[in-house]
Image (cartoon, rainbow, N blue to C red; front, side, top):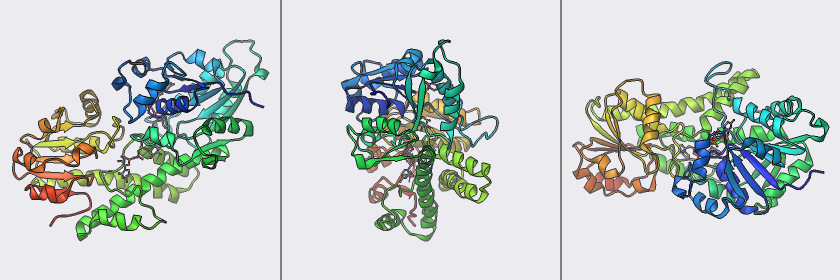
Length: 468
Ligand code: UDX
Ligand code: UDX
């Protein structure tokens, strides 16, 4: 029988660890939740008095932090003490795609997970439930288990037989921008493991706010794989609809109507059918690459090339958009001012990881464009850093503005890359008056009112629809 859970430690105060632990602390005031991170700067930001300075932006997060911080929720860099005191430890560190060595460009880099397991092995005392929260390749639990069983303990002489580890997989399905509501009202909670008591201990925590029927329990491997496959299926829908958007543009159909019509079939469902500049974010590409790697490893080459295509279509869609912008602007962007509205990978987040904006901006800069970028939540430093890491040419002609107005003056074209609400209902007549002519709007997200844009005098393109 596992003892009652009182103290939780989460390693990794990122986009997943921070919000997840905040909601657990909020819904379970009887638990002590400590979030640790080796990045002291990040911890400082989590502790900042001014809640607008938290390291990540998520609607609703500030309220939860205000309610629980320094009550039963702490952010600290004291890894050792918090591991030692915890009954339950979540591993929520990043697992990026490997850039070097075996499986480079495809496999997940597990160096941080490995390090976490070693830290847990070193400092943990007594019985500890260790939970994989990060998305990990199938069978990672086995690796963690082996490290926990064999690594040296911190205090030599600690009685090994008194220490016991239980490993669970509890993948996160939250989407950025809606993380808090996804955590508060999840479609399901998935817990994979072998020990029924450990599974129950975690299920009990969730049962404070999630209905029993929504808590699915499986074996470890099914849980690990389900997370990977959920993301692969979601990404596949986006590539499917984006591939059809190109066909719509040629044939005169409208992708918005096609999405609506096919989504009305319950078997298909209406979600995740918006065509756009392709998927971004920290998970989709990384997880599919990982799936491709695993399939290749086991000799399932047809399966791996099937999933590889999902990524290829995503990259193709971004290139297709950049090329058509160049084409519509008479084949040259030299000395042309282009306004980029939105830089985050989707609305309501300040996250730019794998943002389609990075690739599209890169292509336009390489064509000689003079970019003026505005995003409501991504700051100048981040935008410049992302472009510096991506753009090859030395001359990055790019300015980051603090309002739409500053952005659009005298520009030749506006490209809407992120679907922020404030870009939906702009005064197109007023904007048109301030731009060079012919003035173009490229709406990659299909969020503008086409009639308004066209009435104002613009030349107009949006994903999946051609205005002949
Ligand atoms: C991460 C993974 O990328 C993803 O695969 C998984 O599904 C969820 O966890 P995210 O929370 O978005 O996603 O990552 P990130 O915002 O980079 O946060 C990870 C944090 O872990 C960073 O703050 C980093 O400093 C910290 N970390 C990393 C540690 O505290 N210790 C380590 O050894 C390594
Ligand atoms: C995703 C998964 O949804 C989540 O369950 C998992 O835990 C982490 O990865 P996230 O990356 O935060 O979450 O955002 P999501 O809303 O899934 O969007 C991913 C990308 O797909 C974004 O770039 C978004 O703009 C794009 N997208 C989404 C579309 O282009 N069309 C759609 O219809 C939906």
